[in-house]
Length: 542
Image 1 (cartoon, helix red, strand yellow):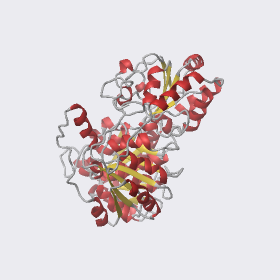
Image 2: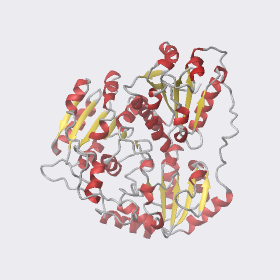
Image 3: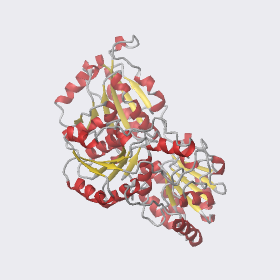
Image 4: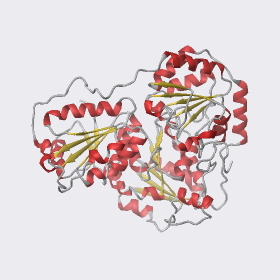
């Protein structure tokens, strides 16, 4: 009824009868990960790569609890997901029964809504409403907790044709007065900047965003969640703003006289010190979630609604305009402060490896990054060509997300090239999913940026704690090539620059999954960098 074609799930005692039904079900593909966390991240990757809700299934207690990090990851990044969990039978709820956990209570702060189904007659309604809530407005995860005794009962099938949710009403798009104020501000602005976030991707507004920017000659900076909303090679693209953003993106925001914030939440990793964030700019915030307005940064005009609809409305009300002086000034910053690294002899720089990944990407490829230094280098150096072509755990910064997230993208897009860029620390958190990609022959290309450290933490210890590398050295990790081999996955080790591109091409040509262990410079740092709480125009390593 909801068009679900894939479930990522792990069986257990309270979901025995659901699995019994799946045993003879041919309409839904079931993917069995090796850990519930791998399953929930895969469902997330499925959703991010398609725009359709991911579905994950787990048993009660520890099975459900193992989903929590993945649910929080999806919630922080507004990813649509329906989470179905088993629960102990209704007479045993609240009695500390075997494998009982109050999962709707545990996940209350990290879900849009949670259902505990206590009557079989409510099951269809709850499932229907769960998909509606997860996919409308600001998307997010919804949990449906089903006690075991409900799963064994039978009733006449009923799926309500309409929703009746008095407490869940979506706001209409924009208000005429705010629209007109914004039109006036854009028409009068001399140094405007479009600062766009994941809300643009969620609403499918990438095409109108590019048309809007080109018509009004406005440069665009994309947050980590919006990478690809405008192609990274577009002349108006500024790259990522904030802590590890480009110098020219941060300078443009700081010098702007109008900041058009579209589908963003003014994350602290972007704003730095809010008192000095775009100090000379009027600020317009276009956002579907009213709760985000004036939460982190007070704005001059707020327009509530779907970003695609509002951009289209503004586009139709504005005349074309050129801003040669502003664009010339920004291009000057681009020439003076490009992203840069030095590939010295005898070393293998992580930036070189990640830049080389661009050589094998195609228009429909996906790059999924884990969390850490490699994530920031990927945001800086991967040339994304479209929305949803790059994604990562942005808000929660979940280590261990990248590999299973890529696995989910590969399930949803079996013909596409899917590349996971992960660190040696994060990969070890969900490396058991090598079994899943081997068994289902999911041809994910896993690029481990192996520096033997928890790199980003080490970088902060280097810069701010006098190189006191407390418990960040993980050099005595496993041999990743042998590990992959044990799971039946092809693996390659690369230690020299000249080996990088041949290895990537060999991996691309291979029909199954491939792991490449790139042994890189151990103490390379990510630059530029804005120290925590600093002003974004005051960067280290410019």
